[in-house]
Image (cartoon, rainbow, N blue to C red; front, side, top):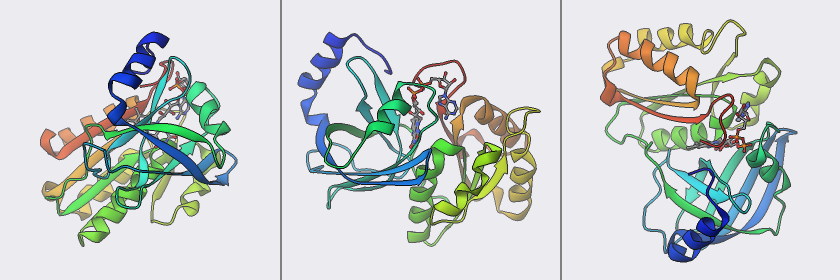
Length: 242
Ligand SMILES: Cc1cc2nc3c(=O)[nH]c(=O)nc-3n(C[C@H](O)[C@H](O)[C@H](O)COP(=O)(O)OP(=O)(O)OC[C@H]3O[C@@H](n4cnc5c(N)ncnc54)[C@H](O)[C@@H]3O)c2cc1C
């Protein structure tokens, strides 16, 4: 629901007021000029759903538009939610995130969404791009807490390759290739499949919708069952706000 008429956005806010949690921006850190960590604090006790890593939140970014983001940390009890924003400068969501500053008051919607950490899997494999770094942090920590493994593979613009050093978990980077979506990622996926117990692994595919399609097809052709794969496209060229 990226864009709705203003009257509808207003009506939703009052009709579903229990799902909108007032929050304040309490911390802002630029890990890089285009990678911004923001901490939101508020009272999440009224939240209907308990956060599972992989779940998403939503913000109304202007009078008519909403955008989704994936917390790198969501602590109901302490009322803390961290998000890593990729400021790509290509749309209103990115422009809105660029303006966030300490002391801002907003309404956080959620958590919700379809993708979630699989507590029954022995191993976890997360694929994504610049927009998935926060997701990877939360998945990795969930796996660590369960004493299971989590491998993260990220495809980045070549000038962003060093970004994996900016987050506090191991992430394997590959540079996006002009030859096509996920071209550089596929050999890394194969390496993972060879060294892991592929049938006991949960796969989470996020980021660019076309890259997800390529990786998903490759996994299925490699014998991974559809039930092992969760995917959540975060963006696609030429489309506004997924
Ligand atoms: C479920 C979900 C979870 C998400 N979690 C996160 C998150 O944790 N952190 C985060 O930063 N983003 C996340 N995103 C993506 C984020 O919502 C988009 O970046 C946001 O929609 C950007 O909105 P926008 O208005 O700037 O651009 P949009 O309106 O979405 O897109 C406008 C145009 O900008 C271009 N564009 C959009 N995104 C990118 C990109 N990443 N790289 C290059 N060009 C792009 C495309 O050409 C697109 O047509 C998530 C999205 C979804 C659906």
